[in-house]
Length: 159
Image 1 (cartoon, rainbow, N blue to C red):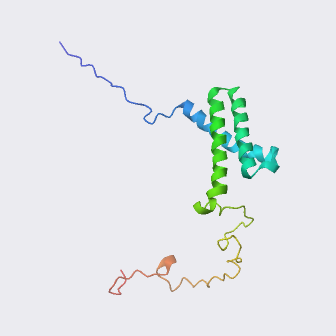
Image 2: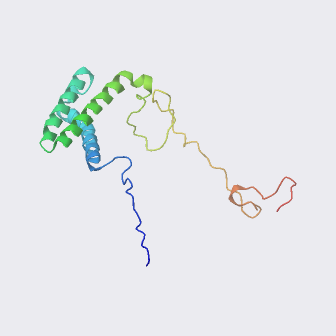
Image 3: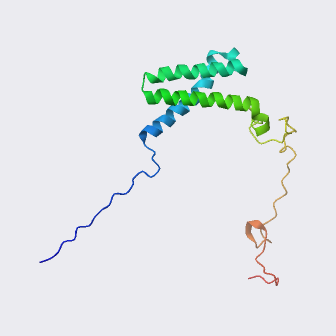
């Protein structure tokens, strides 16, 4: 009589980090809130876009997005609210501590190519205007390929 051994398949965790659909939708709504609050503030209230009044306007817009998001789902409202408050907090940090943290050095630039500038963003000129490439040597006498180096060891013999 043959014995049949039953193989046990013990369950493994299929999601070790705990990231599920609800977490990802919360993140998506949070990103949407973080983008929507500064955008809506700049479009709807351009005069209240900076300073304490701008921070209060952004916080009020975050509350408004929460109420609008709660009509979709509680998860949507909470995500939009948290994203809006994060955008408000980032505006406060950038305005108050930006220079100390090195965050104030980013500004829109109309230069399509890299340029040399001083720490205050003033352009020192186009570094490529003076660029004159060296003439390309003929490849007939060059045995080292593109780099121009020959394959010689320390003894000087080619190998």
